[in-house]
Image (cartoon, rainbow, N blue to C red; front, side):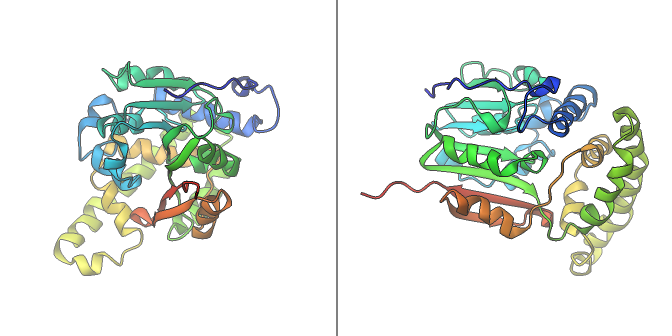
Length: 305
């Protein structure tokens, strides 16, 4: 079993402390706490629904680890939200999963991942200061979260530190490539929206969701059925077809997710590669998932004799 390492506690959630615990990162934690605790997007049944956004198929699309490597493995999920990643890692055969999360939504994970008490460890902490011994885990996963960490380089360094030689670090982050709507339209708009209360931002996301939902089901889906070759050239086609499988209620939450994030870094391919290179990790796969994300699996080499 992996041992917990004692570290200096940084009081990020009340704004005290220094370094990484600045007001902007505190705002990130507070905003996601609001989303996961106040905005109904999914429940535990979504994890078991293979076709849902939170289900098995989507998770392994985002984090394409070889599931055979996870049998009896010890893994960590960084910024683990409501336990979606933990659920699928446990289902894949992990012996034990540690979930790190800075927000208070971590306390809801046992409800979302039932019957896992003996295999699940929850640690409420800053991802930049993981209280986990170095080189003791088989895998570290950070899915759809590293882009919201202000110091994402240090966060990746922590993920690399806790993985043993031969272990893997798996991340899925926003891509700069092919994501011009987010980088050129949504991100500038957020400068106007962010001073508004979260509840108001949530309702502003509603008409945006209506427009996206209508475009998907009145244009993208029909065209993909009758002329898939033509449809494949539409902007954000792969991503829109992925969203086509989502219920309106969930799509509303997803769009609220995109506009409320105080920190949203969009990674160029070279930035993602550099994260692994700086820590001497070997990149096993790097995929532009759905055209709007980078999914990278990197392995820590075993020492040579």
